[in-house]
Image (cartoon, rainbow, N blue to C red; front, side, top):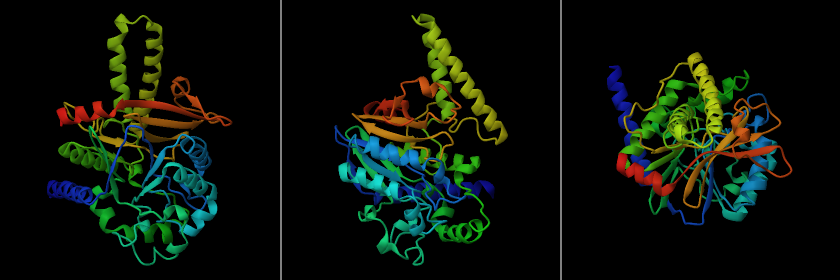
Length: 372
């Protein structure tokens, strides 16, 4: 019986994502385009159950002083406002400077909104949207006057990036989102119980990512999601990426003219990997996400804005895509190599930007075509 349900879950995910893609609008990525993708802000009312409090000021300043000034188009890939828990009025009242930052980017190169399961109320008339949830819709901020999307296909000359939040792989989120809203708003909030999302459950996170990976690989596209809060680049988690990087450096070491630099870099990576493995041992999950002999770089995740030490996003520029980490140097950083690896300081602040990983879009899509 268990295997039957699992097959059904896979079939539901594949069929639902195929239908989602078939009705998704398309936009072309031009050579000079600059795009930044954020997801999972979970903005609330500023109280104890508002997950956005920790990085709200960092996020607003980065948008206003970096991405607006550098002419990036902003894509918000779901779960921006936590409308499952809070009314829009209280969110807007608490975070006016964030909406000002949204507007600053929108005025320069535009803003695209894609819904997640926590802000699906923005999708008027869409699935899991109740009349009660739409109350006051006409007074929402002006940045929402453009159509809000379920998904988006970004078409590059080398291939397609398919952007969607990620909850669409689950029958539960697609069919019962209103039930979840009632539980969170009228039970969890009064009891001051924090959010429990798919990101907090390693098995659900694994299942979501596995379904997305299977879909993207089958269709030979690059899927870009949020939802699980875990940054992924070319289908690799942080643990996967570190192990690949250590292997690459070990191969490079014997002929290197600067072996000391490689030794230092491997030392940092080993320390980080041990920390990740120690954390995983406290909440076990599959050691590798895919168990593939040939890993297809078909899945990306921008991560979230809720990290204890910073936030992640995906940038597209000059035919390249990169995973970027922003952090506040005033906070203690667990992984110090982020401080020393080409960190860029946002002028007048303690905020730093560093590129964790990047590749060219033609190279990514060629590997998808050849390996899928």
